Amino acid sequence: MFALIQAAGWPIWFLLAASVVAVTIIVERLLYLRPARIAPPTLLAEALDVARQGPVSDEVIAQLEQNSPLGRVLAAGMRNLGTPREAMRDAIEEAGRAAAHALERYLTALGTVATLAPLLGLFGTVVGMIELFGAQEITGADPLKVAHGISVALYNTAFGLAVAMPALLFHRHFHAQVDSLVLDMEQQALQFVDRMAGR
Image (cartoon, rainbow, N blue to C red; front, side):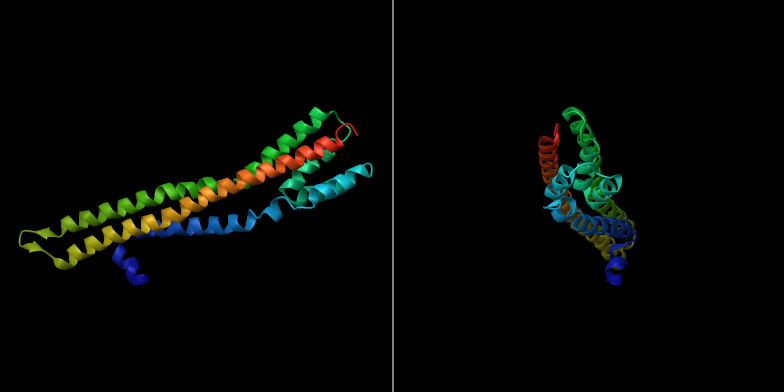
């Protein structure tokens, strides 16, 4: 592996750093954006049961907030029980926007890596070509320098694409997953408002 890095030259270090960032974000988002963690399937029914039993204590609302992003949205509605429907809905929408923002965390960085990696690869290619042309002398070209310039150019191009393609794939996948999760939370929050508003 170290021999490959040496053959690719110093520009490869930027791509290695970008790949570490991409892998870290992908693993973190895969673990965080699980549907059961974002919107537990029984949470709405449990929240409705608690809300129907009478006044809800601040401690119960705080526990609901810490449960999940959906819990934070439902807790905002629970805090506004007994208020007009529009007030409850506004509170839930505000909490929903904050939850959606948390779901999209790090996706901008992943998109930046997906965009930047091919450019870093191109930069490495240019550096390799400069080394290639720098190997030309009056007496002829040094074969070792020519080979090194070609390897720098090709390795960086290939590695830039190898970093960019999975980063772009996961970036789009996570955006679609976030949209689906946000829609699910919105629907459950609206059910909570419909059942509890004006009770």
